[in-house]
Length: 598
Image 1: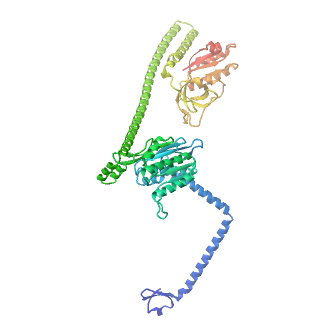
Image 2: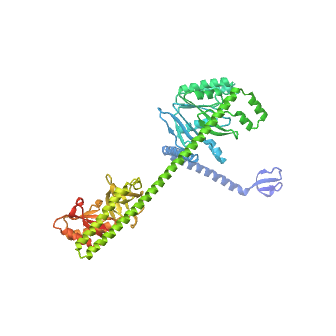
Image 3: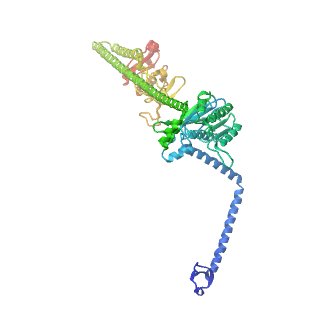
């Protein structure tokens, strides 16, 4: 407690110190000394207990050291996997592929340097992607173009992405494929050193000498500003020799240069591909677009002008240039102009091709619509002719009935009218309508769940499953049946997982009772008692009506005619029956009855 100097005799205790001025003393009263001693003792006991607990925990952990070590390793692997995945999502990466030993390829499409992408993303910008392709026939890429145009970044991108791929990391590109490299050798940047007594040129050559001693067929070589820091003519000749040496080893090589000799070498040497970084002559700014097939111009004077160098100096520099240098620069500029013109023409041709394809599709649709309209008109006229025929036939039948003719003759006439109407409709469908292009559209594939239209069935059916060959099990209304590919006239829609109309989802109906072959929409009651056959045929007609079937056949045989008479009586009373008549000889003759349903 603080006490004013001179008053310490009023407080019994131990003086522990004084203020800087000496006017205040800090005294520990005697009453607190015992308490403070107790606090110190308790703190020491606490530390001893903490140490004991930690020691005990450590001893327990030691018995599980192997499991803990395995857990740490697994967690490290999981953390690495999640980090790779997060990196892949953040930088829109792809999983790289590796080409085989017999077909080595280095392919990049829309590749980006991840560091450049990260920097530009913070500025709200996107890097210009890089695309190139090298293979065993062309393993050397010689990049030229303006200063600050992105040549070095392009080479660093290729080298970094190759190393990332071999480190099992996703790479920021739309597509990436690499050979398996044993080494990645690079000479990038200025390695001059006063301490090592190395100039820019000597450091450059020293580094390349070491690379020549390490290069193999499975090596990626990156050379920035090859032949720099010396006389251009000698530097160009030296650069050509160095590139030839790496090419002879079969290594994949990327080099950047401004030297004319190297540009000519790239244009005249098999297996070497020239490439250029883009430059906008109007804005005097690089576009950072890599274009293969032609060398690029350095545009050093244009860039110096853009960076603010006096115009008089620029013009003087242009005057000092030799005619050969100016001619080469002009030639390269004209070459790039022509390449740009060719690229624009290619784009125009592609647009015209797409427009032509769209026009062809439009004309095809219009033609199909006209054919469909003609088909509908023909169908309408056929229906009108059939209706007129039925009207006249019915009038004739009524006249026969009024004239007192037998009821049997009238029924036979009605049966013949129905049969004639059906045969006429089938002939029109097969011989007239089926021959039109509009009636023969390319049918979609039949899959489980597809909605189809069956021949002779009004209501659309749904395919339940495919059986063997071209047979399918379908469901029309409340009736299931087996049909062949020929019975399916049209596929209305693709697979549909929804429930069937009229039934709750997950509920199906399958008629029980008679064993009739629904593939042919018929029932066979030969050998059954009359009442039993009558009941089964009655159920069969109900199911057929629910499925919206137009026509069915009942096989009853000849025998003594009991089944035929019983079934005829049932058909005459059944509300679903429009007409019935004996089957044709090919369908069973008098041993079967054909029924037309309403």
